[in-house]
Amino acid sequence: MQGFFEIEHLSKRFGGLLAVDDVSFSVKQGEIFTIIGPNGAGKTTIFNLISLIYPASAGQIRFLGKDLGQMSPDQVVQRGIGRTFQNIELFAQATVLQNLLIGRHAHTPKRPLAEMFFTRSVRESELVNRRAVEKIIDFLDLAAYRDAIVAGLPYGVRKVVELARALCTEPKLLLLDEPSSGLNVEETDDMAYWIQDIRDELDITVLMVEHDMSLVSRVSDRVLAVNFGKVLAQGTPSDVQAHPDVIAAYLGQA
Image (cartoon, rainbow, N blue to C red; front, side):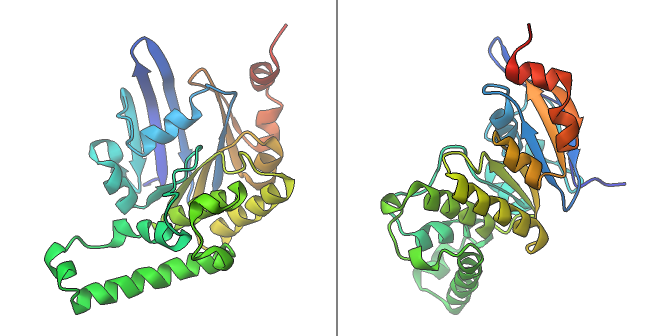
């Protein structure tokens, strides 16, 4: 039976450093699956391998039965995988609306001549993109910031804007790299609701990297713990947090 998303024996070497070491796991459609681990454990490197920002040294990444290994990063997005970044990657001098429209780039046909003459098909495509963006603006309550310059927005709002841009790519699988990083308690609470609504209302599967264990426990169906690029444990949030190897990785071992 074809799986939704599968990683098998994934490894990444940077010179003499093995940052990801024989990692395997799968994510079911409709699931919120979270990767946890101490700083430097290899979590974001796994995301960069999935996004094809880095080529894998070994192993396979399959999405909807297709091996992603020979694709380019833009083809991964077109295939249906969107992501946010640990450090916000927005166009700071553009408006929120402009940043979200950039998220529609993967769904915009490349027609230089038609765009030059602003043909009917180009106008219709722009209307489709605008409607898609407005849907996400409403979903994440960003209407008040639609025309605001990103550089002038509070950090918490910029985190939501980056989430919105990823949703504008119409992903089937959404990669969230530390979505609560830098947020206060109230903003983290809002983020938890949005993550659940993304799965429940938008029918998007979520693969997340996160440090906030209260958020992990609240929204995750299953958890994978890694350290030094290796898998430590996998299972429910409570089972993984109680695993002795995970406790040792976070707290140290006498």
